[in-house]
Image (cartoon, rainbow, N blue to C red; front, side, top):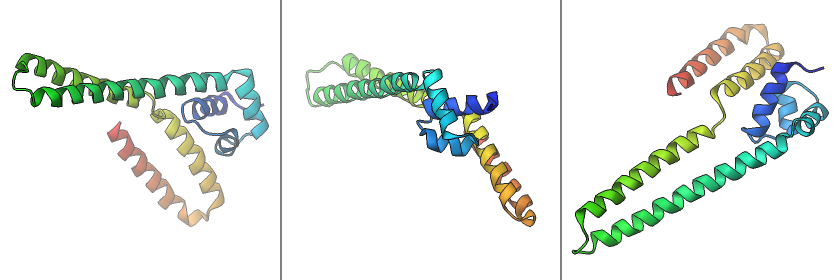
Length: 153
């Protein structure tokens, strides 16, 4: 039976990473049937669809509001009778929506720990299949890459 670690990683890859069962099976090191069983048993498909629907709709709604406010602001800039305080309120609303959009996009990225787990599995497989003289170079690359990403997030 597959380990809990592999199951949790597979869950993150399926739901948040939007990967296929075949891809996940290869990355995690379990059979495609095992991943399919987990998808069915733990209702991952329903959870992924709910997340995708809310993410896509949420971003679409935010973008539509930003566009509408920006159009209104352009109209007001061309209207000599438009009040400055109303323009300021629109600019503030657009800034807040952009901040909300950034947060929303960050929330729906693949989590850093999932990325690290996947990279760890990939690196383990690569090291097992390459010549020993390349191990140190590969490990150094992985460590540097991981540290660079950690600084970004």
